[in-house]
Image (cartoon, rainbow, N blue to C red):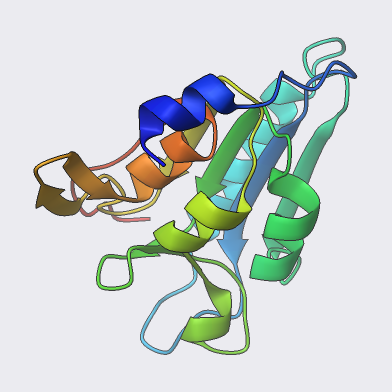
Amino acid sequence: ASLATRRRTASPQNPAGKCACIVGNPLPLPSGEKPLPHAEGEANDVFIRLSKPGLFTKGVKLARAEEATRDHVVKEMLDGADWVHLACHADLEQSAILLAGEDSASGALTALEVQQNVKLADGATVVLSACNSGMGKIKSEGVIGLSRAFLVAGASAVVVSLWSVDD
């Protein structure tokens, strides 16, 4: 389905309240990737800022290091989230966010998986605090990558990086 069709047929926002999902420095990492201690600090700072009473009535979920597995984030954190902040590595070749897993394949949250399995709250905001997270393949329908995947999943705004950033 096209992005426009997906938006028109999306379910109404969760009436029970709003929730936020924050991930920082998933561990263990695929070989060759270095831990991101400042990304964990970033996640902690965002958690503190978003935990103000009344801001997210369904709570703010935080996963760091070993807690930030792909299965945990997808199955228990992203569903219905109004705000998503992912401070981690990205893999341009796979078009994926790298979460904790036994290997690079088990920890990779691909753009395709986001499109097919993630259901954010309508109008959610997503921050992909990862190197080159705004990159993708340029096609006639636009840039195909992580940012578009989160738009298809229900986000109305996705903040990305177009360059490499030191932790």
